[in-house]
Image (cartoon, rainbow, N blue to C red; front, top):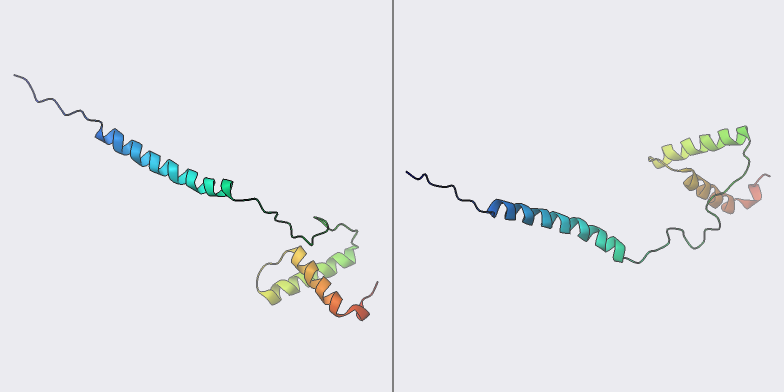
Amino acid sequence: MVKNKPKRTLDAVGQSQHATEETTQDKFKLTEDLALKPKTSPVPAGRLSPQISCTVLPEDKQMLNEITIYAINKAGKPLNTSSIIRALIRLGNKRKDELEF
């Protein structure tokens, strides 16, 4: 007596391959948009140098830390040193006559 042979089809393999191809196409689609986008410079046109370098005395560093803490508390969010320096430049521009050197 002959037993019924199980059906051997490749439907499951085809479905798996189709799912894999869709996932792979989606991943490449994300990077394709980035690759085709024209590159823009993250540096603003008015920036003169990537870093301001100078010697800071310990007392001045302590004052900068206090100003930074005050500004963070006033803004209610974390601020980086460059934001603090830009704010100090704007303040110095408004009060030029009070600047001490």
